[in-house]
Length: 91
Image 1 (spheres, rainbow, N blue to C red):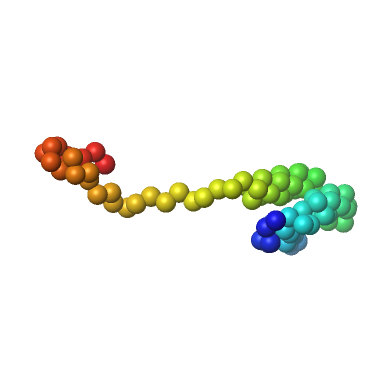
Image 2: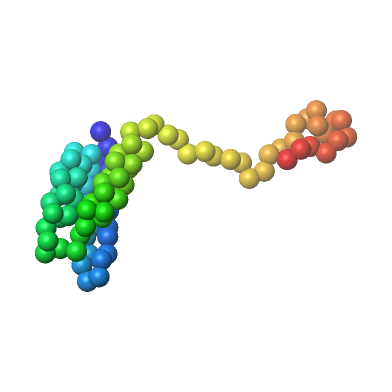
């Protein structure tokens, strides 16, 4: 389980909503988004809750996939056969 802390932020008028969460409290964060949306004293809407919930879920899905960054060489040496053939190597 990842110990990374995710940050989700929204600025609406004078109000600022900043959520810090990790995998352990993801469900609690989703419930909090719903509570904020149902509070008429806040400008936080159900649309905001839906968009932010989608981002929370997307972040979790990305964290669960075991990905490795693609590393590309800036310059590749031509193969010996290409040098001997006299033809320009294809980049």
